[in-house]
Amino acid sequence: MSLPPAALPITGNTVGTFVPAVRHRLKQMSTELRNYFGTSFCLRDGNTGELMLASDDRILGDESLLASICPGIQREGVPAIVAEETGCVLLAIPVRDGSSTYIGTAPFRLAISGNTSPEFSKFSQMLGCSPKEAKRWYQAQSEWTVTSLERMASMVVSKATSDSEIERLTEEIDKVSDSLSSTYEEISLLYGLTQNLRISSSDSQLGDLALNWLLEVIPCRGLSILYQRPGSRGNRNDSADTQYESQLLSVGECTVDSQMLSHLVKKLNLNEKRSAFVANQRVTERPDWPCPEIRQVIAVPLVEGDNIFGWLFAVNHSEDKGFGTVEASLLSSVGTILGIHSGNIELYRRQSEFVTSVVRALTSAIDAKDPYTCGHSDRVARLAVRLAQEMGLDKETLNLLYMAGLLHDVGKIGIDDSVLRKPGRLTDEEYEHIKLHPELGCNILSGLKQLEAVLPVVLHHHEQWDGKGYPHKLAGETIPKLARITAVADAYDAMSSDRPYRKGMPADRVNEIFREGSGTQWDPDVIEAFFAAREDISNIMREERADLGFDVSNWIKSLQDE
Image (tube, rainbow, N blue to C red; front, top):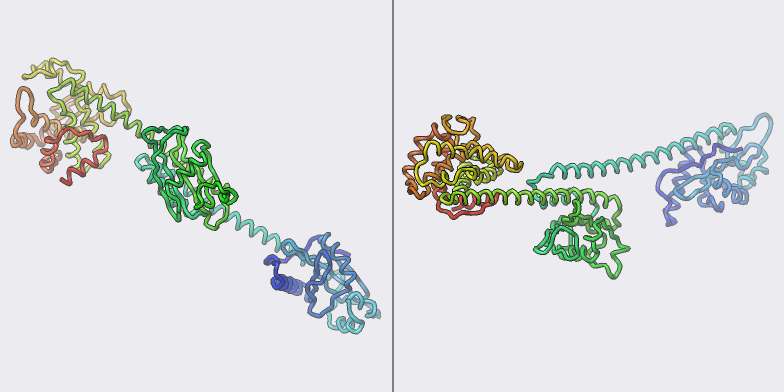
């Protein structure tokens, strides 16, 4: 008769290759079987039937019988009653331990009905002992029925199967948990990077942030970003002749420098391949490997469109293992984000250069139109920046104000030369004509989206605090703040500069006019800032014209250091 078709899995460590470890594991299996059945089991090799561990009572069973049935029990994978005599049965149970299977065997005393007596001479051979030892064993055992033994075996098999399944599911849950934890870290990293994709952040700032986050996720000794910036002969296309200027960012134990990584990129032709590259010991132990310091490496491009801005490297696995697709995939995602960011910065730089060229061209056109006021726009721009800085405006606003100051008189391009260059006093009609230049300037610039922010200054820099200015007679704080600042800078340069028909006013007279006009013609707060920065303003008027670009922070700092 047989029991349910399932082998009995024993939980615990896999049997090792050393004899002491094997013996310890066999004892663990025997103890577990004793706990289930209340009796000691022998354990035999499932392939050969060879005795591996004897039972405590030294009842070993029929060697020839068990040697012949063990392979079948292992093959079928089911427990079975393999021999039966009056008063006794022999139970065999397959026990799995990792990749090995052992057969646990033990005899059980059966209850006998009526006046039937056990024949010890018959089942002594089944027990592998003498009739006298068989009798002594029989008298020491508790009685079982075949039904109860089968039921108990079924319960043991069922419990063992459940335990094995629970252990398997627990391992799966642990794996899923580890995977979810790793995935969460990766998603958090990528989310953090995308939240830092600001044009105001340099590619180096975002790269450094990415490297430090990746060091917590990727099992590597060190990480590097090799930025490839085009040199004088290069461009962003990946031709073999492109000349690059390199910048290296590194974290962790990174034993390679920019020269080594540049050599690796060139030697492996990575700029042509434009895809992730993974090399482990099978590749790095070759004699032609270019960097002996690198045992394992992942290299992914910082790519955007047709442009490669550099390479992201993970160098040397922290446990000296090989890198795989999981690490390469994460690095590729980060490389794509960094590439897009570098592409955005490059695009912004080109747009900024274009806007700068447009502004310079328009400023030159104004100067050419009215050579008597050459340099006026640049001086007004710098004066306005200094006033705004005194009033506590932020860096971005200072840069915007400088651009607005350069363009505040762009509308004079549309004013008649005879009026604009007239050396004497203007007639009322001529004055009305020249008063058109704010609106003309606004119209000229309104088609350029990049210059939208300067339009309020261009249009309203001749408004007055008391509402008597032009073109819209705005008053007080309804006048845009940057226009109020530019108005003071514009008036100061106009009064202080020499003209063909008059000399510039002395400083005392300019100061007097500003004090009288504070609160009527000009914003009192701007006039207060003017007097607070009076010395710097005088120095600005004495400076030669300077091309500041649109980042005035360095100029402001140098002015404060003087």
